[in-house]
Image (cartoon, rainbow, N blue to C red; front, side, top):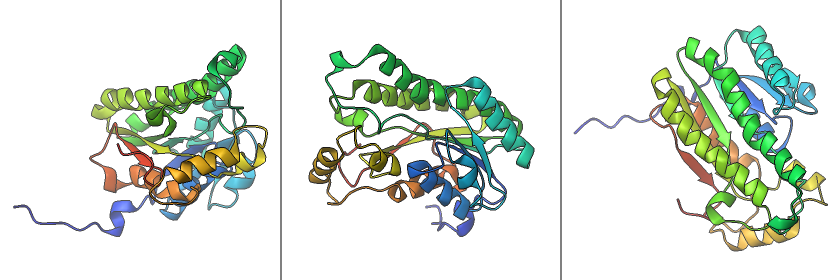
Length: 260
């Protein structure tokens, strides 16, 4: 029998690593960036608004105004990270469209809205991965964490474009894990359930806040709302040395709403 080895602080330290967090100015992305910073990582925030202000709260933080569906903005994000530290070790693909979406039957979803959701949630994730992987390869490896959604496991209705986009992100996570394993680039995802984030509070005309909160709590073992801070530790773990033998996996963080 092999000797039991207990984890040490070094198993979770990100000292000396550079992490890009898209959609990191607030909400789930900001909570993850905070967690990565506490673990010692240098933080690069990419967001449509507030990136520089958010980045200013971290030692040597870098903020980049970026639309993740725009390849030029993604290139600028990568250039800023490299200029700041000369390396990219971690990418958290968090930017996405959700809270502004009204819930409605699938046949009433405008085609242009479907395209926009998938351009940001799916193509944005693809573009981020495509841009950072060459630098991770040159550095001997890296970590990619994609934020998907518990909706894909539960078949949540009236948000078909969003649910479909997050299903694509899960599929991308698994396929990229296979493709990049030999390069030492580990690709995993985190799937939250309905989370009380800044975006939810700021978009009362979007997703039905009260209904989704009540339904979620009713179906959870842990009977409370979920907050961005509830997700941060899972994402940080997937970026840390402690998860060095994990790739292609999804951690569901939902208070016991869905068993994977």
